[in-house]
Length: 457
Image (cartoon, rainbow, N blue to C red; front, side, top):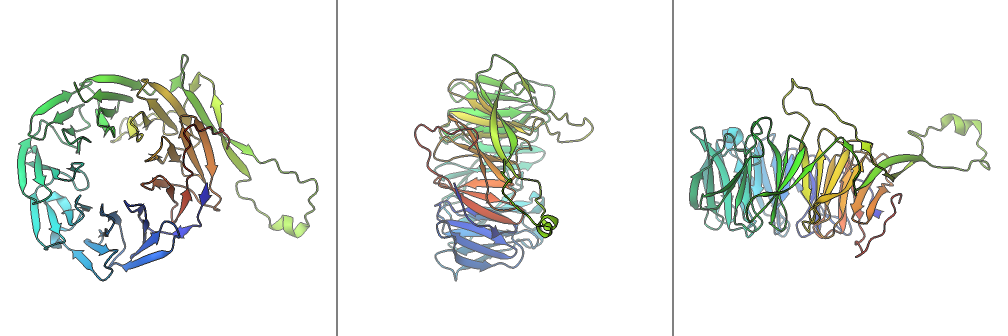
């Protein structure tokens, strides 16, 4: 892998959907860099510090959330002189997002008073009263024709269906929830999954015409659902819950066909490979070196010289387990991270009670494929959008990768660069790596058909 030099950032950074540009927030400035040369191709100055950025799907427009104002500014890459500013006045702005046609911006006011659809074509706007959430509760169909928006009035949750072409309401129906958390259209646009309050276990599947297709409830007592995700193929629905289990439903009968436990101790029989991150000091031959006293007095090697590799462990093996305190809300337990591979064959999970372990499940064979055990808690994990390859980071200077052929570690050559977050480019050729105040990119080689990586690369 090849790494670029580090560039300054003070906020969000993200690739454009067409993979040609990187948008970087540096205080009140928005820098647009080319992904090949990394030269600045556009520079926009906002009125305040940038808190949030989002590309339009056509990669021609980009919006910046200035939530301290609060205000939204949008810019055009093809028409640099074009500007747009959205200010909701006293209502404020809690969140903003693009519509699928890249010509409308949806803003949610503070205290969820209303959601407003702003047109960039004719400056018209449409209001939706009482949206349920600020950043959640809005989902678009894959073809971009319809939007489902959660609202709440008279202590009851509703789904509002809107046409993304005319922004006319197509229908409204109530849902059987106590406190709806979020909604997602299925990848084939045939169903809407709804998550309920974590105080009880309930997942609801609705058709677009308002019929409840299925109500799934794995148990009745205890905290319920923590994460829900459709597979890219649309045939499976994964549900992670506070009881440290992953359950997978099929899209035909909505019945559970797989239940995966995240145990603190894995015992035989187990066909999964367990990779554990270990440190190895570099063996330096200093027999022929001659250093004077001045050099020795001024030398300071922070942390020593180490390389990192994966070691394949035998079962049984026990993972570090953190028992959450019983007197605090939002306990760190259950399936907090849940992500499908692009081919829907694998799914990776993290049980928040064991934050240093990443579990990879094989849905085709209904078994555990691998476990990656890190030294530090896992910050982020993301699948390659093109190949079956998983990349994760833990806040160290290393990247960790897994493929069905094995796992390996990659060291970032930049000094004092701790990888706290990562994002893939849409074509799978490049990774964006973030530190606290800087970022860099890494060119990722294409994955061959039959990879053969060693575990200590």
